[in-house]
Image (cartoon, rainbow, N blue to C red; front, side):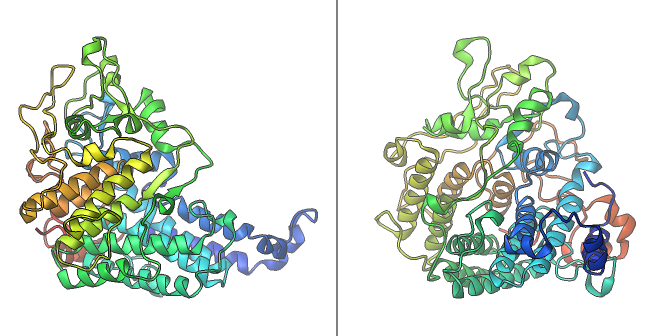
Length: 529
């Protein structure tokens, strides 16, 4: 991985390479293998665009195993309640106990931001077609939205401006407003060209289907709109209703789901099964909820635990934020049911239904749910659950939806070390129209969390925004007082590289935009309830 490098230096290096290539046409012609394809032939067949656009798609959920491990397993998995560390070499310095190594902290910042900007620029350089250019802009928003939600203020709108290697940071509010602007522009352009599909070779998600990209863009817009509801309710409602009522709209069926097809092994598979026989296991948080609800999706999500006593087996997760045990017992906890060729989920229709359920609960016009119910919020809530069951090929959605008694299960550690004395929540699955706002919110967010597995960064973001689902506190808080155990981690601090190479701008970001110390305990802009 690319450590200790300024993101702007990497970006400009990429642009310099592109510019150099453009200035050496004669050299390329002289040295070109005459038996190979010409530049014109490659452009005609879409090969250059394929490399550029598919390369950009690699950085939404990173396909690189090491990058994905740091961002979506060790970070998002732990903080989102989906995964727990199972490598005792991580003891003392990991995300789960709020004391990560410096080289962990910098991955999302140093290894993703520059690649996203370089590759988006590359797409724009190799084609003048507004359709793939707009898709590239959607991809940049989707990838960068995860990064700003991890750190808060980041360099965004002024990256590379005037050739300055030290880019100023945007406040997170500015980043969000810029992302809405970019999504709106891309949606408008693609809507005008909605029947003009592009080469499927360049698109590992939708095979060049423009209407699917419009639905994804509107779905991202809906997600980001709900994220800012506690700090800018007017903006949130405006963007959410625009997305829900757009002529093409958001994802509504599982055919719309955004999955990244892979040409290499699924990175979750490698992390969960191959690194030291698995560096992560399934978290006790999600198994406690799904066991308590007797959720039929468990066999789709998880590989069962393998403890010696048969009565101890089932879907038994590992608690996060512990002193990780050594030996083979740590590998006996439930694992992720993921194959080598399993596609990477980016976003699904179930999430959109739950987002609309929350919008309807707030009195917004989210359109009509697929399921008729006493209220639009209930209809979208039930739609979200049904979509998730179909997505995973699980039966029994109706009994699950109507379960008014089951609650999350108390966690009993099969190893007898880290059991949790109480239950995290008493929320049931069945919708209660007479319940108050907070109880309805907890139901919506809890079921969205289950349906969004394994999107840990998204789960962590929604936990910070809403407080749901209720998760078990960590056993070991090694933050030296920087993180409140009850509130849990709120963000990541900036990499030391930024203090070394971009000191003035990072200092301004912390003092003027972050509004608090550069620690894991400081809230990001939208995390105000």
